[in-house]
Image (tube, rainbow, N blue to C red):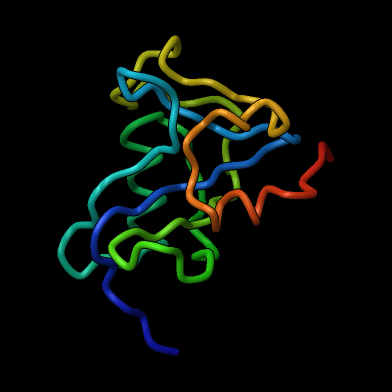
Length: 122
């Protein structure tokens, strides 16, 4: 198995109990996103980005298939902590657990929309 360095933007897809973790980007809501550090895989970058932005611990597992933009990768990140630590950059009012069915107006990559289709509360 080879581990490829991530390029471009990494977007984390954190789903828990039928809800998607969104962060305020100033103009609206979106996925926790950021730029990978040198030699970082998309999986590692996604987990780091979520923790730095939100304080939630996640495990970056599955990059979603190639999207329409080769400079962007979405990674599924199972939640490992039910509460964020105090270390996230964003305050709690800038974090939102949105029911998946209420994210229709949220700008999400097509690969993420496909992944979310059929996702229900556990």
